[in-house]
Length: 115
Image (cartoon, rainbow, N blue to C red):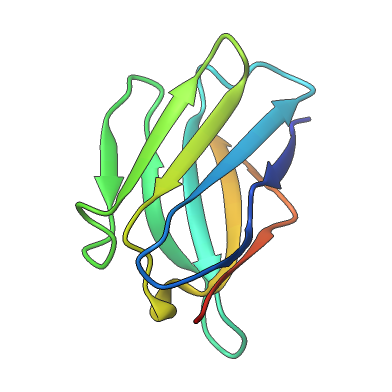
């Protein structure tokens, strides 16, 4: 079993930055593919970005060149650096770990972009 805990969310003005962190426990996630997803009320959860166990990254078009995912296997963490935030980035952000048929989710952290 893997437990994931997100942190770093909050309120930020448009154009600002936030750094989210996902701390894993229960097992090493160094061989897991990790990802960040987000969801707003009434909408489907959507992919933001993923990073494979080998370090390959993938980004949604809407966040390319603004968001950066990274992983630090020694600390069992994954981070999401979010720059140039927009109002439409407001959502609950979830961390996900996948390996073979196993999928684990964190509880989410709220990000609100507003002036």
